[in-house]
Image (cartoon, rainbow, N blue to C red; front, side, top):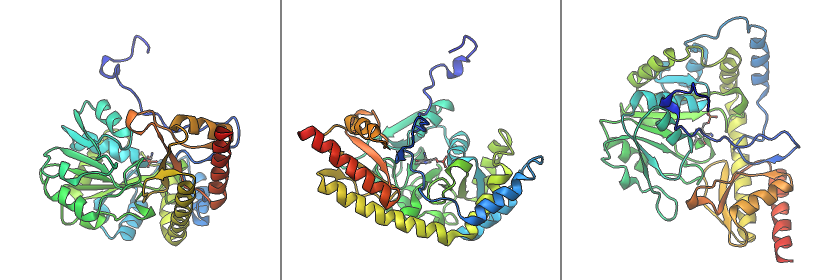
Length: 352
Ligand code: PMP
């Protein structure tokens, strides 16, 4: 730390993103990216806009927001687009939270956003089976953020439970982070007209193969969206670059391609779960594009390191409650077969 770093942030522990190593070609199952490339219209739109990079992007992101509104059955004034969903989440913490609650095991950025913005936070323990107890959030009287499906567990709350939480906290915003909803979850977007305290966030990073473009969005009551725009225009009005805006709009015109990819991932998830269980792993029932699994035969970190040595990257977290587990992104069937072969090899080496 330099002597100039402000005391306001001196104790901040930043978020640690998953590794993006360049030393060799890995089977990359560590950051929940899609194994499938963007669709042709996306490539065309990005190339067209690349030729106009001398111009700023549209601060209103009108083309993209109109498309999002159409696909999600809402009005454009109920939509904000951001530089990844991390950005809309941070904006929501800034805009709506004096005090915020989230599970003890969830997306690691939530405590970072809270600390960055000096917001006191409560981490509510998941149940022993890693599920969220919705009763913990009913009448909580704090801003709430819940990832549904949750990460890194992959477990879902039902829409009825989500609605109960929203309904019982009318004086606080409930942020439902649906980064992984397209892999089998139930979206709360249909509730935004009913509840003025609901903000749903989603991303193009997972189901729509655009992690590198950085595009996320929020859907909620138009007054919530206006507040988020107050923050956005006070930070970076050109937060989404023009290639990404038009690439995102193009992706929405080819939604069928992406939703078919999601179905493939769900099939590969079922295959991987079964293969891991056959090897003695405990695998949580995931509704996301990853599984969270542990083995009694090898510790979480040891497995992560042994897999890395064999060219397969998965994500290991050091937090005590989940240190025995690894989060494994679901890729192509070929990638998942490579993973399983590598694990078989590791387990064999252990027992020989
Ligand atoms: N929410 C959750 C639960 C996530 O796992 C991620 C991905 N790391 C994000 C939000 C943010 O993703 P992005 O900024 O790429 O949209």
